[in-house]
Length: 208
Image (cartoon, rainbow, N blue to C red; front, side, top):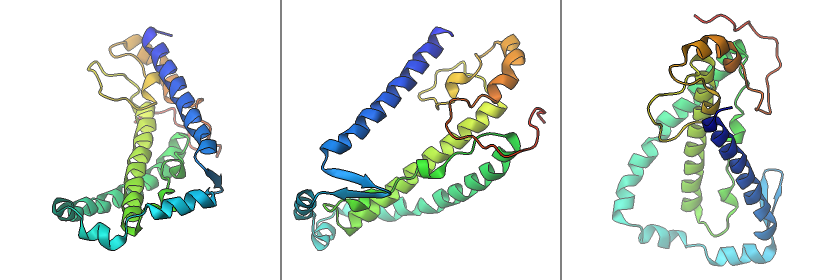
């Protein structure tokens, strides 16, 4: 394992550790998760309600710039919903053919801010919108990452601002021998993923 891959493995391990530590905060934030519902203790919920901005005041004192840009923001919902539909159909068909583990949509779209009593109806709606859009983009990125791993698992020569989590397994740029030697191995290596589709599928050894 080269130094770059070692660093990326360390980053992945630290990211996992960070998520675990953030989840531990549940015990110190006066809430419990029951199924898909977040429950606060009575005192905290009561306190939250006193901090909620009245709906009429929220609208009345809203910045004119914010009001004018709202339609533009919400227009983005149409391409996002279309992306959601297309990318879901795509992976449902193609990933089964290629034997790529399916991306679990519910892991990326989390709607829990509606349980916050200190948010009014408009704030909750805005939060739901942001949760959906950011979730769909993350969901789509993971689908694209697994697709790229299957069809073109080669690192770039140029520096990337950010790299998806499958990139660390890719073959070094310009290493032709390694590419020919390890292409089939790399494109099928999803051993780090928890969920694997075990259905009998078409053979993916051939590449059009």
